[in-house]
Amino acid sequence: MDPLDQLAVRFDAGLTIVMNAMKDEFIQQGHSASGKTLDSFEVVIRREFQDLVGEILVASTAVFVDNRTRAHRPPFKAIFEWSEHVLKGASEEERKSFSWAVINKIEKEGTPTRKAFEFSKNGRRTEFSRIAIDATEDEFEGELDYLLFILDLGDDALRAA
Image (cartoon, rainbow, N blue to C red; front, side, top):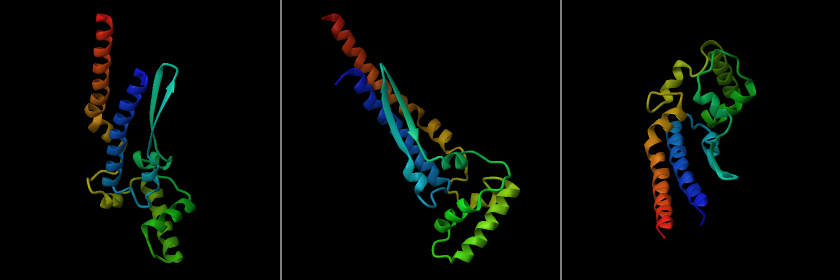
């Protein structure tokens, strides 16, 4: 296996640590109603010439969850679809009423709303990505440092030969 491929394996392992921390923080903040966004997390490593590019991909809806939004009027359809996961077994009329209440609250407060914090297990409702990155920085760097150390040993052995 060439050294860049070896580095890619460690890079993937490091990003997977970060991604798993993001998913855990996402759940702890109370954002996993439907599971769709949670299921969308994915690590992608690609080789571009002699460089490696790594990304943690997630559904675009995560942007709204990760960041605060100003007061705005969200689309009814999106909130109504989400309500199916929040109000399991509720009638269509109950879901419509609930959806309009949520829309009106977001229109006044933005997101997260004050009431949304009741769903959080850790008291937070935003910045799951930054929190996870900060929490796993040393472990992520450790994955890469280990391989760079091994590659340095290999270079030293080649120079000595």
